[in-house]
Image (cartoon, rainbow, N blue to C red; front, side, top):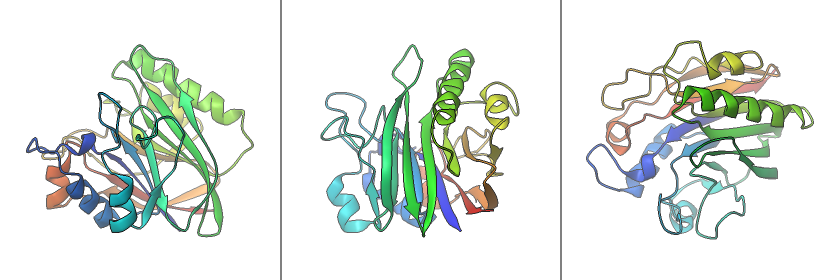
Length: 230
């Protein structure tokens, strides 16, 4: 069984408007997943530095970042990042360019986790429904061109509808984990954050992580799911 999680960490700016990376890390430690997709992991302006620094992760966490080679001090690509346990082997990784009017992207990594191969895609889709669907199509087309591998896709899809738009597009190829409502952290009303698994994977337990730290660390709550090979 592999535990995966997705978290829009909002650059570690909490609902109290304070930037506290240590609090973000506290939430991640509570979730305790093998693979984590982060959104808004880098600062927005300037050199786009990672909010969770290399030293913080190395000294106080069981994870390492997947490096996509974009910026020396950035963790990911357009704020998307992947964390994996330090014993996970990273077989391949890439940053995906998505069609958009504003900076958006996705990240992908092929991993060896607990002796099993797993492809993971992290994403943060557009606020516009039209562009979300174009981005979904671009991600699916990219995956279709790769050698097939059990795949988990997760991230902030920004989709408020229950089963329309990009959700319908993804559902043709992937099953959604029953994670629940994750936004807004203080009063969850929408399932903006999603985890999806390819047919080679069975979805086990899944949910939204509620804790005092999670309710204040970001405006999103983390979502998580357990997956296993069929």
